Image (cartoon, rainbow, N blue to C red):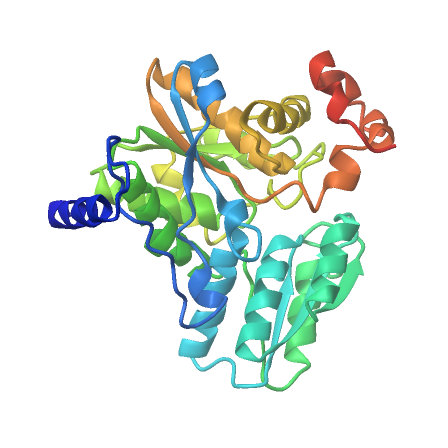
Length: 370
């Protein structure tokens, strides 16, 4: 490393470059020989400077919205398809079928295009139109269906499974209970966070949909730190996981709802189940705090991210308060706000949810849509 610094310094001096300031190693760009799939992961870790000062802690956010498909779900989508290929479940020209709230479907659609598969997506019709439109633009066949509980045979996941079983050379990727999802974060997200923090991390927290991100990242960080790094589940209203963790395993009936999309659960998925005992605690974040943080992140940090990302950041601050001053807490920025802007920055939508008053007066200027 020092030899590289000396060589660069010498070369710069020969070219007449002012090297009075400390020299930085030249940037080495990522080259993906496999195209889109090889560009998944290796996202930046951002220190949220103003929030860190406010929280008296180091709040670090993994910029998963900078994945090539725009979300953390690119990781799970890639590993799920690679797993199906390695197990011989899908052949060239086959069809990938999934039930998803949107982002996993978007990741799958990108990778299907890159690998030559057809893509069929079933999703609750409560999801943003932006996600539906993007899936169609990516060539996916999209079936928005009524949002009904998992025990209803018309649940979007059951419909996806039946669709896959009706086709030749197809696979239902089953993201909620397919542990290739969890493995993606054991092999990529966790190691990246550990390397980017040089092991100087006290806790990790994020919300769960499938549970893959929390479970896989937790497993790696627990193993590499000999259990020192703590893990906290972040939950929106309407999910049962907060009460499940804090009660020591009592699974209550699901009630309530949240503006966040793709997170919160009514059950413990197969991805999450192996790490339940490893989770050190949970925090529940009301929608009012999440929506305020959407606007704060834009105003204070220049980050245009969605409500689930904002919820994660609120959770990171609350975890830091639990751990004490100067603690280092890492979380995930799941995706950008682009897919949700017609809702999150709409006065009429915010009013309909009773959330306009949750946004401080000095941030109301960002409510630019009717």
